[in-house]
Length: 353
Ligand code: ADP
Image 1 (cartoon, rainbow, N blue to C red):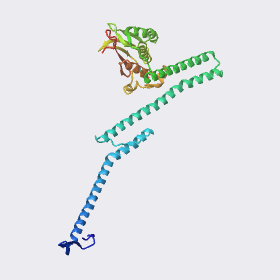
Image 2 (tube, helix red, strand yellow; image 1 turned 180 degrees about the vertical axis):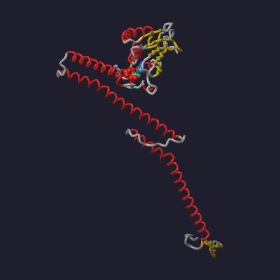
Image 3 (tube, rainbow, N blue to C red; image 1 turned 90 degrees about the vertical axis):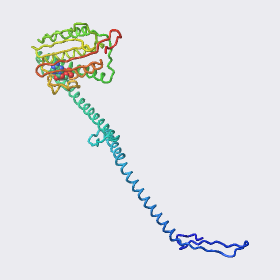
Image 4 (cartoon, rainbow, N blue to C red; image 1 turned 30 degrees about the vertical axis):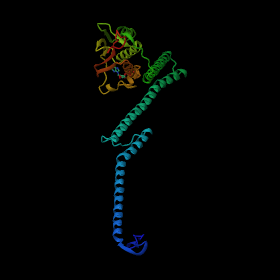
């Protein structure tokens, strides 16, 4: 038989004719190889076409997968690298609802939050440097004048010493407030939940502040709840909140104004309402007064010894008591602060819900 059908024109098959165990002849059969060759060629061509189609389809699928999944993922990796370097000037396509789009939306949200806190941190650092620098600059100026004997009159020297005292007190208040705030935010501010008489708490605060308030000419009134109320809270910390609110009311109320304090029960909360007829807070400023160092009128607040941290501290303390603090104010007419603290549960010895 021919062995090379690709080159030879015929298949040749040879069969021997055997008679009485002797080969007496042979039969040779010829069959053309061209049909087989052309069939093989057709098969080969078809195979090449199929391979080509499979390759093209593979390339298209890889392209589609990479442009829909790998591409966006690489972009997200790149953007997270940017975020970790503090760069936020990038655009991320957050349209769609598939998993990649959801991941992009989450990265976008996370980045905006980081940017917001970063901005707040920078602002706080700038503000605090300014707040610290102001009293220190004054103190340096007055002490220098005293040291160098620029002022010969006894009256002026006493005035400077008084100013030095005021500025150092302001600095001390600021540092104490900052310390409180840091502890509150760190979670190390200890709250002792105890059965706290609201009326006793108010009497303590009024013992401290009633005289200084009335001395300014402001009319002060206190209407306690008709039934005794007991709060679940830390007496000293809650006192700090009320003192702060009352000192603010005093600072921002003119001499002919009034401050009215009312306490009452509402939905298992003890409520302390402090209303004044003072300067009020402009509607635009109202949402921001709880922020650290935010002051409606910087110079006036500083002149009255304000640090801009009081309300931020109040809010933190009230929230640690699972309560809430709200404000309503009309510029030029007055302000009402409302503090709600959960009542003490007499039988279980815990918070009333
Ligand atoms: P400050 O130490 O400046 O008083 P706070 O955090 O206690 O800081 O208050 C923030 C700002 O809210 C104040 O600077 C003031 O502008 C405004 N504010 C607070 N309480 C009153 C009030 N009773 N009447 C008018 N404005 C107030």
